[in-house]
Image 1 (tube, rainbow, N blue to C red):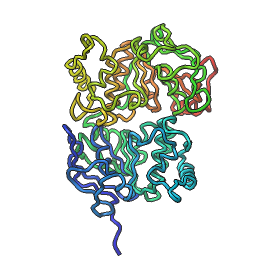
Image 2 (image 1 turned 90 degrees about the vertical axis):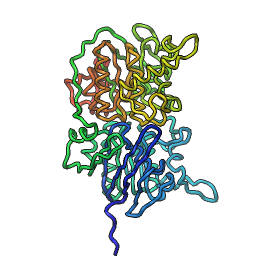
Image 3 (image 1 turned 60 degrees about the horizontal axis):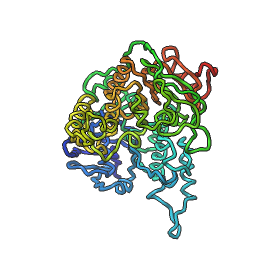
Image 4 (image 1 turned 135 degrees about the vertical axis):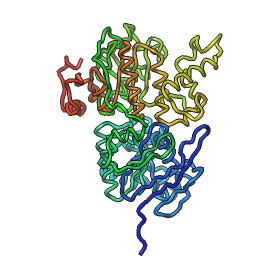
Length: 515
């Protein structure tokens, strides 16, 4: 009788090069049957590239892949699916104008006499969503649901295909603390059922909580594999970054002065549902403070930010920036009046993906005298400006300023947006999920930049789903629940547990305190 091989997947001596960069340099990774194996590394360390090789999106230049001990050739994702390998990508592979159900069954449809039969598919998807706590509206269009909900659709898509090797690429980057806890339970449940999970993440606490083993990559090279029971967060961060990382934000007490952003009685209609997503919200952000809006995803934070930044119209209320009414102002006018914006969805609202990195760096400034003469863009000035920001913010890309932005890792795309917005040196910075998808070294740097902006007299409005970030970075916390601000908390005088009660709607301050 033949014994079952110990490893369900072996990636042996994988090398993959792109123009100007060796993304994977002789990497060996072995996944045991029924284990959760974390893959850790800085932004651009080669994690997503390695997983894309396993899923058939890229072909390795050298090396081989074995499944259950046998060498396999994975030319495309269909080959991977046939081998029962599934992947949830960091940037979701969904069709915006299709419904949730259509996206889940796409490419794996049941047909009768040439017609797609959705009844059976709907039943299976509902059973999966119930079993794993992945509640979604199957008839909603992808373009109308939150990023957190899109994440759930991707996971359901993988489970629907009965895959046995599951690749999660940054699965928690867009989830709330409660959703992350739920996902951890799901992953443990899947592993207990015999499924094998490869889990790319930057979050050390998650690795310690859920992974059996962890392999670390740095700048495309394999550093080592450790059992999580034999290590700690400090050691993992050292392996990843190559130095000690400060995991707690070091900042002085805030000394706020004048109001920079004033929001009064703001209401915003939901684009998806026939109701108000933001209900009569009022708050002020002053120069020299970081005010954080915390809440579980889908409680009106996105709509609030869209109304303040001009991406959506307010139904009623007033928005003032430095005393100037900008409620009905177009986006550029708000920008020129003093508003920098790090958006939640970097692909939709932050970058033009098929433009170069240098073009994206000057999106908000190309029309200024520094970058143009008599209507003609000064490309030498653009190049010099971009090179300076790339170096200052350690934005890693294969071909420097001329790299096509789409080809960069998600974390480096995020760093490019942050570099552009903070460098504009404006009185107000609106930062939505600014460290989403960033490694500990980059998070440390971005937090330092936001605190430095605050100390330089800027007003910072932070919207974050990361409880550690909320508690560490904020001077004041405003909690949103079902479109309303239900509490204003001082991070020095509250606990994560109390914050969680407000976020879940179990606790609410009096009307006056909320404003």
